[in-house]
Amino acid sequence: MDCIFCKIVKDEIPTLKIYENSSVLAFLDVNPCSLGHTIIIPKKHYQKIEDIPEGEANELFSVITKLVKVIPGAVGTTDCNMGLNNGKLAGQEVPHVHFHIIPRFEGDKGSSIQGLVRMEVNKQKLPELAEKIKNEIGNTLNTEKTDEIRSDKKEVENTSSKNEKEENKPEETKEEQPTKSPEREWQEFDLELQNTPPDYSEAKKEEY
Ligand SMILES: [Zn+2]
Image 1 (cartoon, rainbow, N blue to C red):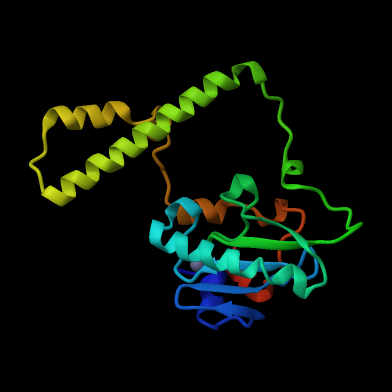
Image 2: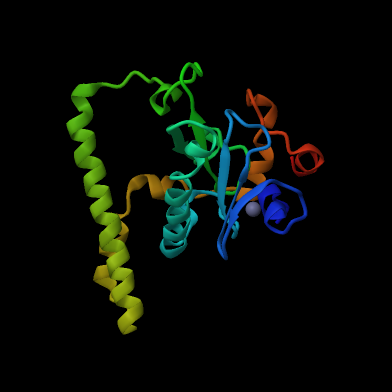
């Protein structure tokens, strides 16, 4: 995998590391939005947050919550924005999941997370949407539970429960079957469209 952050993990690209354990690495962003802007990554390569197995995600969040207690104070402030760009539509520039801690300062003229996008949304349809999402979450959890039971007890596959599982799948899942590999998709993502791409110098040019 030719990934900038994987190269940083393997020390093939120098970076200013501030914290490291067996599964997580944190380093200062090379193109900081503010003083102390920090990137936190799982050492294993995952593209998006939903790709990380639960145990590893917990380790990542554990480090993030530790670091946020220190970083703003270290740069002389109290507050910060935290988050990740999850997928290219959300502005993810490096296809290796990474969290940002961006310290905020009095008069820095920055915005909030809610300032990222402002779509016209029909508020009257929100209760309907809440119901839809709630059902889809329920279906997903039921599917996971069914899978657990199957693998635990090694039950013989039962045709009726298989059909039920298919019916419960959200329609979007069926429609969004990828027609190209994730790698190909990321190669097509044009970094030049981004306003402030991070500068990873030669490594970035090679990769994209
Ligand atoms: Zn990677």
